[in-house]
Length: 102
Image (cartoon, rainbow, N blue to C red; front, side, top):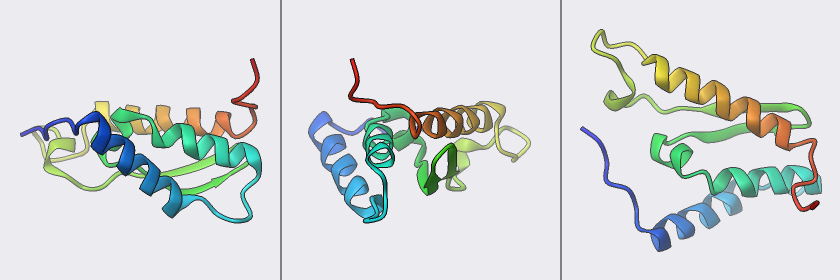
């Protein structure tokens, strides 16, 4: 069973709240940028992925245990695990890039 997609306004409010909750005073400007960009990844929100730890070239993400993340055998589906891996690698790469540069 899939969850309905949130409205754009509700998704933006959720992203802003997540950013406020996860941003840390000691974060560098690039970490702040990376967190902000990740908070706008609709697919990550849909999966329920959150940032556990973020540092330069390092991202640790959490994926909640949900029935829709499991395959028919009851284990994490390959698509969910591949998505988590891709998101973590992308977020870690963003920590070393000036996302405001043109």
